[in-house]
Image (cartoon, rainbow, N blue to C red; front, top):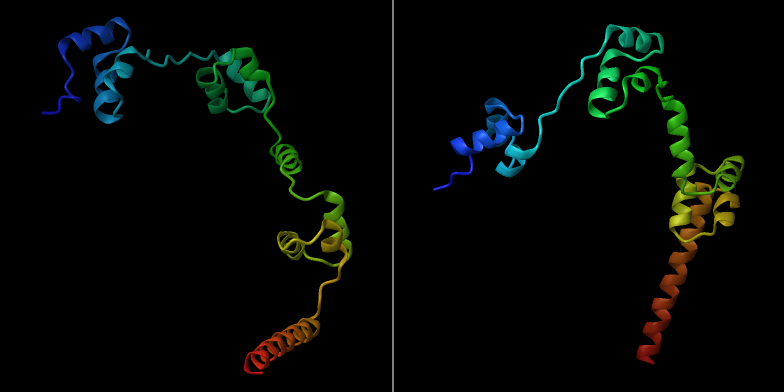
Length: 170
């Protein structure tokens, strides 16, 4: 038999010594599937009461109540910091990460844009083994140019096949 969800009276007492009530222990083991040792020894999360003075200060600084609670209870910030530190500017943060995670140098991307080369074309050229300079400066071929190039390659390929076959039969 499997007794991993059965809680003995001794385990209830041990949890109570650690400040964990009966309901919290049962929830941790039976609903959240914590192992018994962790459920018995991990102290419960104690939420701090937030003074209305700090709520007003946070609101004056553009910080909503849920953010104030998150900062103080979850992140463990002192209440003054939680109520006064400004929120991050999402646009600035996104721009900073965009610069940090840039794959291709900005000057080549700008050069490609000036030459009328779409970003995806530039990217595919680099993946195909082109140099950054060549990928950003060589003009995009027209459909006609692509067709002529394909026709030329195809005729070269066929010519080579026929020459190999002639060599075999000679």
